[in-house]
Image (cartoon, rainbow, N blue to C red):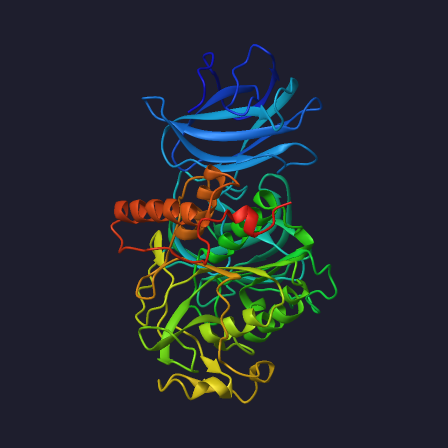
Length: 536
């Protein structure tokens, strides 16, 4: 709870001037702060920024209920240019929201500017969502109504957007900027889909925000489905090379968009962004030492090679971290004399295979790859679940599991195909099995820490409208980040696990979803994460 402050000024969208003075209240760490209140509406998405030439700004946003209790939405230090702060928040209820402007260092004073501006809703690849076009939506010059979404794309990314409607003739536009104000049209389509449905595809020219516009060919209203798919450019190769062996390296893998459509997820790409922020902001990892593989970049071959050539740069005095968010799968008998799964089967990570095939990486293989690293300290975080029954849905809560029928053309290297007898599995003519001299995981738990989203027999969930998130993310990864921010660098692995478990359990209880129990395997659970990762 913040210290008592003067009556806050009520603000709306716009730019405001303020100043931190010695008469302002202080945060717990000694920083002066000003508080502004914004009367928000459910569904609003705001961009908030603070700039100052006098000090390094720090932003926080909360929701205040009628009893003046504060619910944290997010914070930022240097999300803007230079030492400016920038924060995007999603408002989920009508009412007052507190915006706190402070300094990063204690005792700093001086003038600043606060800017509040509306943000369009965001959409990510791998999603198919139902929407409605109504008469209250904005119109183009021809009188047709439209809706817009932000999409963050990369140079060379092949983006495909489909719009299907039984109520009207669909029309799609892709561009940059805000419609009606310096909007740059890049691509448009009327009937590129079946019948009167629209479909456009474009190789994006550069990194940055793009605007997807859903429209109708003639003035009309009704429901429609918007599908966003993409194919990322080839992953960087080689993944790295000869880095400092005493440094810290991370491999982050997130898959929203699987081959086909039945197994697509909506949270993992957001999870990768969260984990990237955790490592850089909380534990001082260098951005250039973090390799991210997303969607079709996350092939079995690429992941295995990245273990060797990227994480393999860490020597005995270095640190390696591996994060995976996507589907998990359970099946096949245990392989190897050191397989210790009590349920007698192997778990696996569901990844991309060659071409448009799906493939797997067994837990044994992950163990073998980890054992091959020279790093003395290795952190593994897995946000996936292991179940053979699909419960995929289009609602706000989604289970990260898929059956064999959901996985498009599941294809395995020859060395693994004999483990599975389902008719849908096919042995590949080629694959990455030559990279692995064996499948026996030689485990060294004294140097490995494993954090997992759920027990072997539980689902792991993704959800929209989590506090402070402007896109759907996984429940475990979200509350992991919240716990790390709240408990600080001195928090131990066990303290983090307990806090995350309590938060996940309560959230899923409110959503009436089955239990999800985060797991921790560590030889020293009372060690702080910062110490284990050798925070600098």
